[in-house]
Length: 245
Length: 99
Image 1 (spheres, rainbow over the protein chains, first blue to last red):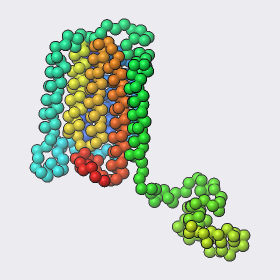
Image 2: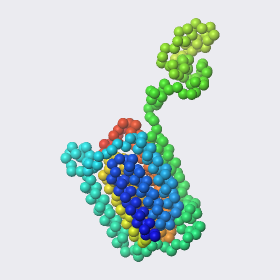
Image 3: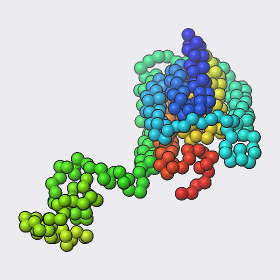
Image 4: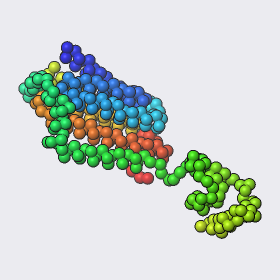
């Protein structure tokens, strides 16, 4: 039973990985990675890593992939022709593509890894692992992982939380809008502009006059007769003198 | 199943990810392939953790996932910044580190 499950999950893992690399549309690549992660969670469960499998599904396949989908939709992942990995510059130089070279390096790496892992002669690699007995606080359960994280690996736990904070701040700083507001945003009427009474001395009024935000830049019909208006005379006189302040 | 099978799967996943990092040009897909490589390493870590019956490898796998999430956050922020500046989304065109 467990070997059938292993082969099904392993096929899913490898097919998902090949789909990520092979599909030309980045959107489909992200979806292939979701399938890969779900299959990998099954492999983690088979290895008795329950907490890591749950974190994988919730954090990776849930949160991180949603972030990817958002960015792919924002950037507009255009279809890339899989033309042998040739760049425009390499093609203009007359190079014959780097995809064969990449495949060669990847195959060499696979052969080396397989020799290193399986040819190591370790007896334990051939076995199915250490003895395992199910229980509430046994190997791999959330209680076990939490116990380790908060006692023996407390420094690692705190350092990774600090790293997450730095990465969140860095992501916001990198992706923020630069160079002030766009022209569209400056003329947009916000709800506060409608609720706020006129002439209460905000900085915008001090610089640009008493016209409401949506009428700014247009000739205001009140502008002509307001200096002659008796009721508003002190205010508008002060505004006329100190308007450029 | 013996641990060797899991190690073989992790080696294959790592090499597929390395192949993608070397050949794809879209930085989004390069980030996805980096995730593949990290996942291959995670699978090996958890397989060795199971082999010894020791939880340290699982802790390291959780930390690797945290670092991968940070890397995704920064990388996607950079891609959005590149897109805002109307630069081409292509790792070969972006080889000069100048404003």
